Image 1 (cartoon, chains in turn purple, orange):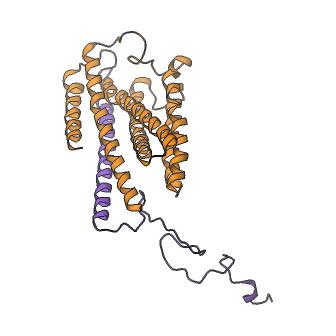
Image 2 (spheres, each protein chain N blue to C red):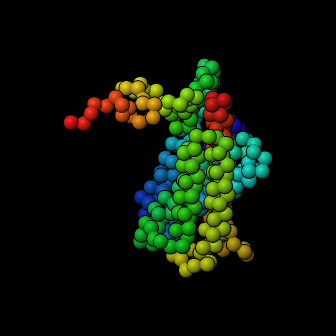
Image 3 (cartoon, rainbow over the protein chains, first blue to last red):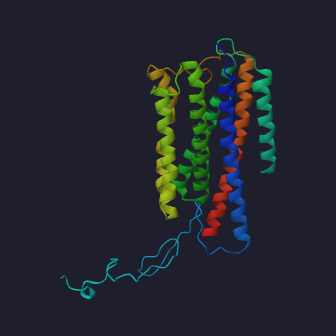
Length: 90
Length: 214
């Protein structure tokens, strides 16, 4: 049977890439979190996927990216204006 | 941590020396058989990590200690990485020896089911915002997924498969030549150290994340 060195290289190379990538990700994440705790920014909720968990006590929905909405929400929570403010249908 | 890191690096170098410098060319398959030294230890480390995850999950459900959940989470994630490497290297080994990258054989299918279950475990953890609820649900899923490991191991006995039966984890003595067995065990020790290093480091990252959330 031929030696198939290319398959051997592919298997070891793939394993090396996966392990190195995972190890680098762990190290980077650890550095980020250590820097964050050192800077005293504990109040921000940080998740492992780097998004911010937003919790709001009021009843209005808050976007997770904190961008402002183009218009205020209706009280019913529906994006369209209240029925009483809509112009009558022609 | 640093000591474990250096031991891991040393183990990996020793493993590579054994795999390519000392272990001989296999008579039937040729040099492609050297893939075994990464393929087989990867699944053993994955099994060990899942067993650690199983123990951590049971401990969390019993005592509700966040430390147990962190260990379970870290071990299951690292086990999934190693199982992914095992499946990928198995496909690479399968092509020149079986003539196919993949077949719906009992061993390959059962190991893929376990892999998908642990991917679901990781997705579940990320999908639930409430930390306690995420820990509780994923602990249950982690236990159910880990209980499938015996199914993977015995699948080669219970069904007719293309995958060969175990050469080592079986009753009776090994049929492997001592030099090949030694290379396999050195590679296993190296990858086990790497797995332990990853689990310790991941658990630390999870602890830092929880501190940041508090």
